[in-house]
Length: 192
Image 1 (tube, rainbow, N blue to C red):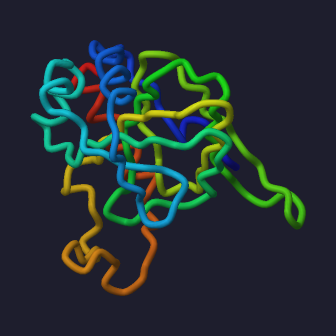
Image 2: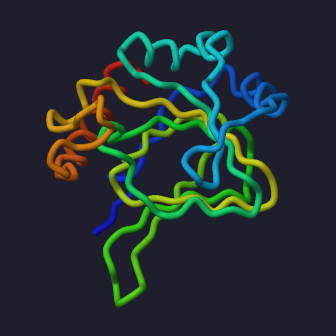
Image 3: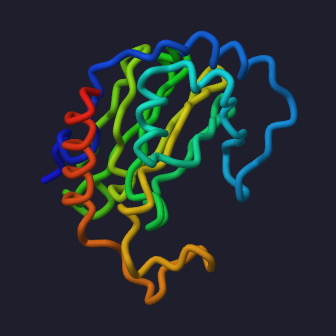
């Protein structure tokens, strides 16, 4: 059964740079579309993110590839499971977009009906997401900006071929809850 505690975890520390990141995003042009999807990407500006205690601690502890996603208004980023090299992510919604909805999909209830849980972002708080549980985003009304960062490489399964960008034997990890729990514990130990 799908449980909130398996899908996401709210960090206890608020962002110190959310307004600066939001302003930076809105001033940017030339976003790069990611693989024919409904969102755009930019590398997160180090000069801003390194001023945040949470992000600094994450970077100091091996978290990697910080970027910002931009979703178009009136778009749906379809349900998916992230690649094996990204078993989880820490996300920060960069504005109080009440018309943006992130859902996790669980087991089938009947034919095309599935159990679903919504992550209702609290403004200014970071969330650890289990990206190996199907998830998707409905974004209505306005642009949606999200800061995201990936966990340390030690959490990438051994069978992942980083250079090829795919699993060596096409296995999807069965250890996602174990990895997610270990990441949660690590964040708690960092007092985040």
